Amino acid sequence: MEALLDFWSAYSAAIAFGLVNSLFALSMYSVLSAGILSFTTVVFAAIGGFAAAQVIGTFGLPLWVAFPLAGIAGGIGSAIIAAIFLKLETHWMALASLAMVLITRVTVLNTPSLTGGVMGMMVPVRASVLELTILVAIVALVFYRLHNSWYGLAIRAVREDAAAASTMGVSLRHIQLIAFLISGVVGGLAGAAMATTLQYISADTFYLGVAFTMIAGTVLGGSFHWFGPIVGAFVFTALPSVTQAVLPELQDIAKGVVLLVIMIYLPRGLIDPRARGLRKAARQRQDAAVREQDNASKLVKNAGQAHD
Image (tube, rainbow, N blue to C red; front, side, top):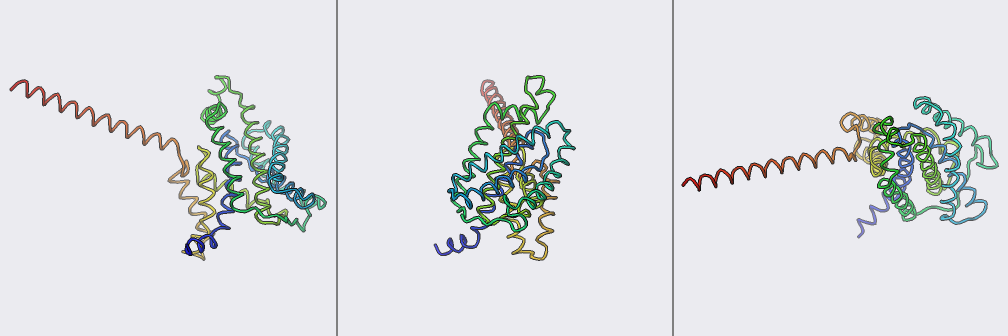
């Protein structure tokens, strides 16, 4: 029991950040699964984070009111951005999303009445690990239901072959708009979770470091299944603790090396439904071959007995 308490005392903060990073990675996964590379999750997180900080700090609303309000704020921001971005080609969309991250930081610094400006904002409420776990579980349940719905089937078709999906009546623009809206809502929740975990946010809280974290978590875990970003976010969050214990002087380099190794040897990430399907098919072929061999042996044996 004492060992368990020591473990919790040592790693509860890492678990909390793993849960927060899971939300960031799921927001990134939402647009990636529609074939869009966009870093606007950082923008949605900033909107949700400062919205949550305002309603908690200024109006005294409870945490479970602030979370949905932050998600709605992120969703509204994503609707506005999607109306502009979906007119762009993919590579221009990626560049425009990076520009939006820079614009957001400047906007935060120059709107002190809403964001605290250069001083940032204190958040008087702290989300517990249990509350973060419940929030991630709710979001994961939504992604699970979406994965097994018409939307999940359509978005996989768009990702595999957009032209073929279009001929089957799937609207690429409609699917990408839904993906942006989901990304905005989840990004807003991630921002609120970050704000209530750190209890302080500023313009630097939602900057390029968050963009790197969310893309790293999604790539590590795998962007072909909704569970992959959650796994990747926890692995990426735990990696600094592991490298700090083994190679403290190389922890920053180790994160980059691990990313490179996974991209080279596991290009579809740690959670790869296609690899699982291929392994299952291989096992079925092997079982079928064994059965055919057994049947052939029985036929030979029966023929020998009949001859005798």
